[in-house]
Image (cartoon, rainbow, N blue to C red; front, side, top):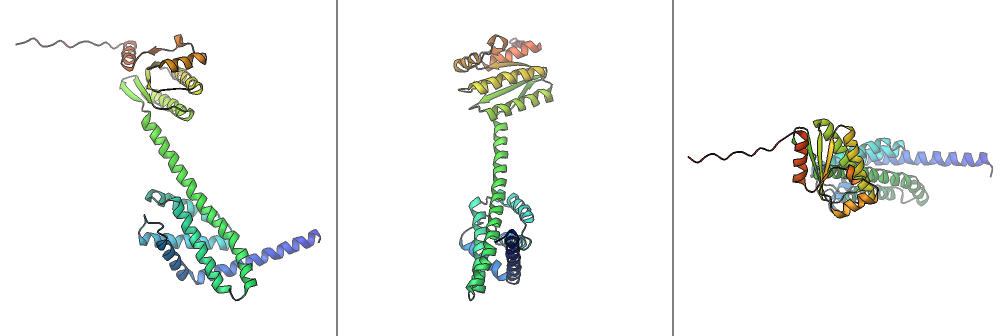
Length: 296
């Protein structure tokens, strides 16, 4: 068979698929109410979308059904992708899980496939042709909705992780021009970068001159993170703030030495209280004891 014949055959197959899909879309439109109700019944029986009310399930099912049929009709997924994104943004905060969204889309695919069996069961050849046209499109739709939901959930998880990291590493203003950054727990390269960004924003926003970084609560630090600490100290210095590091453990000090840091060039103090006192001294503050009142 030559190239021209192959192209002609391919064009004929494509036109046949398009015609079958048009017929399929017309069938789904004519039986919209019945098929949607059957789908909602299956959703309820499967105990899916339990975080939503019956009215909410009906409204979303209607929108999903219409978007599904539109995707079959146009054979494009752009509108469905936009709807899936919008749907995910609305229902994820309600506590809807990934398996529920995947489940309802697969149920819809099943409900529609069963209706096709009922319509074309008398003609097995036509039934096979309809299913050959329907199944690839239905699978693409299911994947599109599932991927959109998973992406939105991952985005929310990243936001939550970022919020937790910010809460776990607060930059505190002790007094004018003096900041404290207490660090507790494990520091990985991602958290180290986040610490640096928070600190430098704090230095700029508060026009800080002294920063006390307390790492008493850090049990261990690898060479990569230790080097990042040194770079953080240098970056703060470039913004006009001196850094005092407190709470160095022997293990962390050894790590700093191993990567070639001259500890004589890094301002270190044994504990947080000593670091604050040193910072206040450098800023010109003096601690003056209050005289006790004379007894009457």
